[in-house]
Image (cartoon, rainbow, N blue to C red; front, side, top):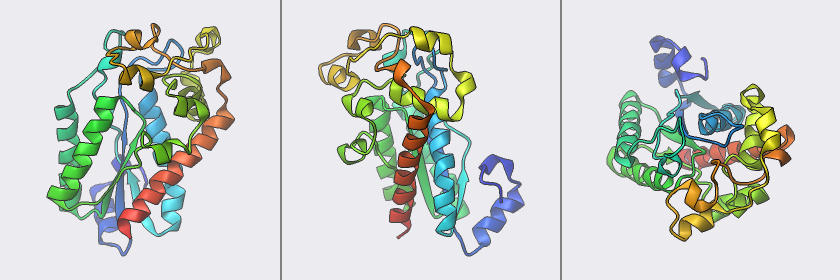
Length: 251
């Protein structure tokens, strides 16, 4: 069995579904949007892929057959819409795709859908909460969704994350450093001055764009303080939350 869902043949997936193991599909959810001048547009996808990969060993140890689905790289991302490269889709479109993925998984006999999300745009988080509820109510398919915007989980992550100044800052840059360092423009990272403006506070005060929130270059936080060590530690924390959520749904 290959944990990368798309790298299996259909008989391989069928065999896993017919085995005694409980089968879980992990959907990494991200966005294609501006992340400062130093991080790639697919930063959230890179991070969600990393969280899913880090969660696999714990799930395997518990007897779960876990597959990482091809990533969902498009989401509501209107806050970054003014920056080249950002592709934003409607909440309805994103929710429809996730619901239909869940419907296919349920029909095939998967025991649980897990969502690894690192795109914390308020519209995207609200969309995910809504589609999780719909999948569980209409399809009767358990969905494991560790929502890191909830206080209990947010408090397990870094100080910068909790401050809300965490888009393409120390938090996200550290994570990309730990998994895909070749994607970072190091010169631009070193040239990125600290920006302590809190996105969460700006959103609460009515800001509708990164510029209005105090991020004229599409980043918030402290990119120069990022380290791969912090990235690994954060991946481990986020992966544990994902694995724990799966175990809670499976019982």
